[in-house]
Image (cartoon, rainbow, N blue to C red; front, side, top):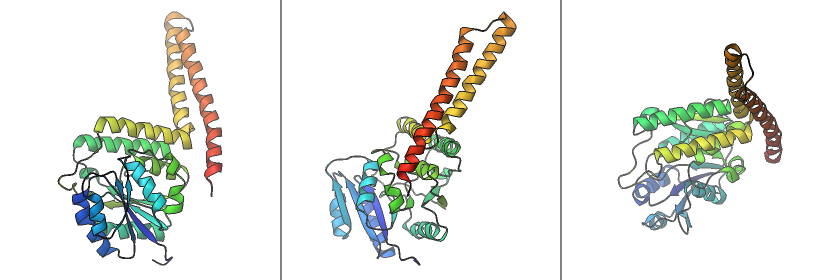
Length: 291
């Protein structure tokens, strides 16, 4: 590495003994100079003892606090200038780490994400859901997002830590961090990766409907925080057009301006004004987080 930047690999883990047993020796062999840090999120299996056995630095939560909380702990305790986040369940190929880091450094990105092909997802419902979230988040940020929920990513540590207060303790830290980087003008790059199947004996904690709604709320929340008019202006315009169409219809058929038409048009104006106010508040956020 030409700039001699140090690297930390952070693995959040909740009962991932089988994945870690295979993954840790491979990481140690491939990247002997990198700091390896496992965040043991209140595991009840032998996750901690496997880390100790492999002489890997481990920080343990007293009880399960969530994937996002583990990521935040990892970011706070990691000593590297660059942090690699990857799952401990065996889905991510350790060999891809070097390609993510090379792209981050050589092409001057602040974050590089391992983007999974849609065919990687286990079900057609998950594929459709991820396609929708990628498209919707792209509209909210104004940038093409290839994989909104990938947990395999490389970041510049000092920049990533600025957004820790935004990250939820549960899912999904990838969604929040990706949108926050884009909307704060920190360049985000992508590399196509193949995500394998989870190690036998582990399970996914993401429930399609519940976490799907949560992802949607996160997209709206971060979009409204960093670029409010991308949310409020289209919503205002849609309601105004509905009100205008309703007024046109009632005028033609009944020759009058109805209360519903007035309500819709006034509501569109109120939403527009809220958007302007939110934009002013958002500018304070940029000032407080500029460096």
